[in-house]
Amino acid sequence: MIGAKDWTATLYQRSGAAVWGIPVASFCGLLWRIADRDLPLGHSDRERRKFLESLQLEDLALAHACAEGTAAAWDRFFQRYQPMLHAAALLLCHDEAAAEEMVGLLIGDLYGSALGRDGRRRSKLAAYSGRGTLAAWLRATLGQMCIDRHRAARRYTTLEDALPQLCGGDVPDAGRWIDARLAPAVEDLLRELPAESRLLLKAHYLDGMTFAEIGRLLGLHESSVSRRTNRLVAFLRRSLLRRLQQRGMSVAAARQALSSDVRRIGADIEGTLLQRMEEV
Image (cartoon, rainbow, N blue to C red; front, side, top):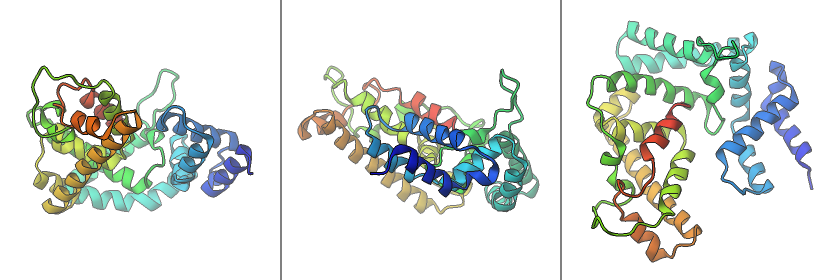
């Protein structure tokens, strides 16, 4: 049986964190914080190990080193990701000058132009958790910046009004009792979604963007965005059904709960999604 110290040391070696001068204790502490934040309460050591082994460890080490201001890490970052970011921004903005501006703004956030109360830079890269590739996280972050700019010119739409598909299409009788286990199950599931999925939900349901508009922003065909959204909503419903049963509901009761009006279930869907998007 491999002890926790041994397998965390193995993860450290796999990450290549030593190349950037990150101490073992510092990197393992980072892994522990990510697990404590993203895993459900009461998780076992086996679940924690499996979760941490699934992370993009090399990307996580590079992002952490950049967040700490390591010059060599930033050299590697620019070499590996700057061409990709410029190409993605050009695809999103359709204008060379605007693309350069967006990349410049993003790099400023990633480097950490703002200072915290302790006087240290606050790098947006510190929010990267390694659950997806750093390249995908960067594209989602860039896309979010473009969507925020787009949203400023649009009417604000609440997610509660725009996402009835999440918990059923029909609005039930207003007096019907709603099981209290539904709200935390919905919020927990939204918190666990990867950045790309949260971005898609926010763009379409919170910001009211059409599939065609999202496609133009992300460089995808409208039909691809539609399929991804439909698959995501179907995944949310399947996952909620399973989680409600894990919380002690029968299949019939869980299905009845999923037919509830999303505006009445008591879940802070909009707040939860926005909170998670702040990490993107």
